[in-house]
Length: 398
Image (cartoon, rainbow, N blue to C red):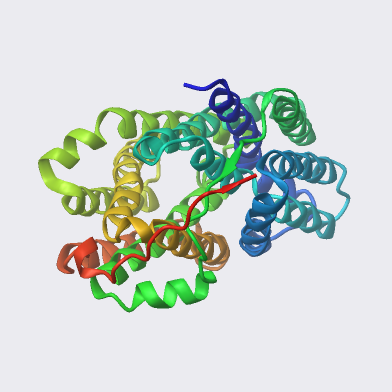
């Protein structure tokens, strides 16, 4: 593997550790400023909205100015946002900090573009797995480190997140070269136009609807976890961090050692249906659990189901369109996922505030059961059923 990709992996991994540190801490930190659960949901959503707006712009700028400067800019923006978060003295400053992070949050999309620049088409799927591995490891080590630093104070983990993000920026500055070629698949229409085209294809439409429902529910689970544990079991930030790290590790093991075997036995759609069903069962049982052992037992099928569903969704989207429309499909799916991550925190935390902590997970289970029914009863799209691909444009030299 080229050294540039090793450095890229380390850069993304370290930056995601910083992100993972914040997830279990932010609800507790926001409560010190008097934030309600609904406000906390809006705080999580503000990041996703800002990122949704900024990511396409940063992607275009990376085509013009280069991957390396945009990646470094994104990482430095994250450092600034964490510093603002640690020094906040009002809820307004918390929102400003999260919006700054979202507006500069082009590191993942830029990393994907970098991989495309330096990797032959036949090897890209394997090397895109680097991003998935960085995500998984970041969400193991991040919450665990956040839990350790939370014993000091609420701001200590935030400063730690700023420090690791600064290290990621330094790694990119010192060792990450600018790729010689920037790959382009031709003119890509705006996401809303691409989404309208893809949603007109019945089989693909069902997969995209399932994708939206899955990421909506995942964000409900992720952003209400801390308040659920606090209200029902009296957990503090360290408890939340350790539990999230444990189940993130379990999810990574599922994706590494289980998904391939299940997919060979059931096929992609069967694996997706099984994963959504297990995740729904786990969330429903978690909503009803009244003791810690029951809650932990309920999280096991939830983590297993999510570990099965997430990579299978990516595979189904990829195999449902011709090669020339891969960028189109992934961009449209990314837009839907951003919408799910925006609506999920607001919905989940509002449910928790007004109807009790179990209501968010119960509602999430209903959404997953609905998406499971859609996945089980709708024919999967095939590339031959899609519109023919346009010829790829030649890659431009930089």
